[in-house]
Length: 126
Image (cartoon, rainbow, N blue to C red):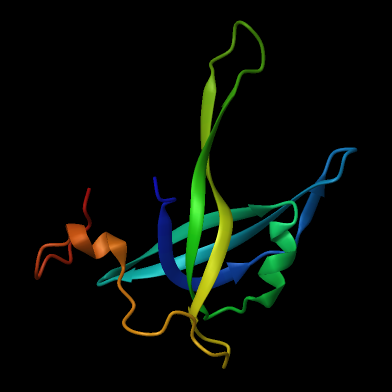
């Protein structure tokens, strides 16, 4: 099975954050996807060595990220309500355009989310 991908323009790159005694590292990159009258913002987390790869990115770069979904359950104690969290963990990325660098892959950029769009349908899908 092919790993899922998402395309977008880099909107924000946070500094790397370190957690715990073992030094777990995480870095957030937010992608923007223009959808007509609104912009869809997608937070993608790069972890461990992936944090360093993000150094090559710049705001405004168009990229394609290979990712996996990661879900967690958290409950303070037996009597409290359980909370569920979902994150998008970036495994790798490919620069399509931006930062004056050569585009990778070349050709036309296709947004996989456009497969669900109806012609002339610029309304929010929910």
